[in-house]
Amino acid sequence: MRFGRVKRRARPYWLGCALSIIATITVGSAETVIPWDEAEKHVGEEVVVEGRILGVRCSQLSCLLAFDPTLSRFTAVVQAESFKDLPPEKLEQLYSGKQVRIRGKVVENERKPEIVLHSPSDVTLTAGERRRDRQEKETRRAQAEAETLERLATVLDRLADVTERMAAAEDRMEAVLAQLEQRETALALAQASQAPPPPPASYGEPQPRPAYEALRTVKRGMSRTDVQRLIGDPTFVESSGGGWTTWYYGYGRSISFDARGRATALVGFPPP
Image (cartoon, rainbow, N blue to C red):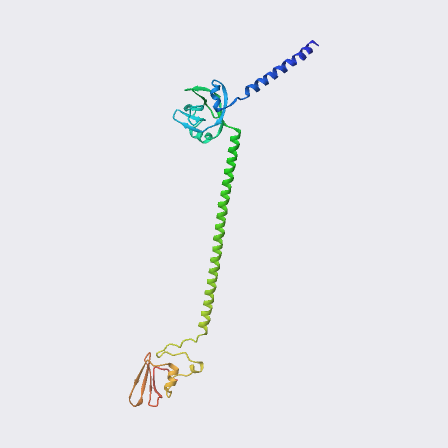
């Protein structure tokens, strides 16, 4: 029973200790945020300074994050030994013109307050600045997407225009081909309707004759007209006295006609 009473009495003590620890942690974790132009009032204190960085000036020894354009008041300093974690080129890109919070101990250097930064956790953007950054990124992304869609629409319009031009060119080619086919057809019909040209002179060579004449051959007593119709015009005509003439054909053939114009002598022609 006594042990039980001890436990009941000890419970409020431990509860009080726990509440004290929680209160201590809460108080210790609370940040003291001050505006940058009041940093000179907190020299030697661990504070959080909030303000807008107006510019970043770097040398081989250090970089100064200026909250005042004249650099005569509070500044955040990054020593060269911390350039690995806080590169100078990133400081300008990430923090110039932004609302930030600087964490650290305020010290006085050359009669002005400053905080030396050692890691990226010592300088952060404020919640509002982060929100604006996200909005700006979203805006830039939306603009980039809109520009991409616009360029894509332009490309599609150009492709549609090219397609239409190709279709028009194809239609013109088909029309030209149709006209050429019509002209070829008309030319073929015109050539078919024309009479065949007369055969060239055979100069004694046998000429094609109708079937009923093909059965006939040159023989004595034929007139000049019959001979000419059967074997064509001679290559040479020799006139003799008394109205006699001799017609010469190729391959040593000849026909002699008397004064009446009748064939009297045949040379080189097959007998009838």
